[in-house]
Length: 126
Image 1: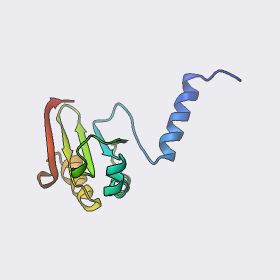
Image 2: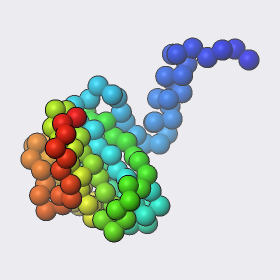
Image 3: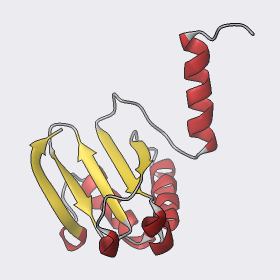
């Protein structure tokens, strides 16, 4: 079997992201993480992820989208974290697909925290 090059590995990674419906790059100014542990999925995180992917595609936004597991606050699921460059991380709780659309408009596009879904705002800037 031939050795894989860095380029081969990057192609595999990109293909995997595309198959999972995820977009991403470490160089983007906004990163959105949908927490999709078992509790998140049971609470509707897949619908939230689908709403996020649709909004980003419809509005042609340049946003990194990823998912993670449970962060231990199961009663607040679905949870979404928004990390904007040089700003504190914002974590939203009990997010619905409709709430995700509001968060995209208000925070991801407009830069204003969607207060009614706010769960945690860190003091550390990313």
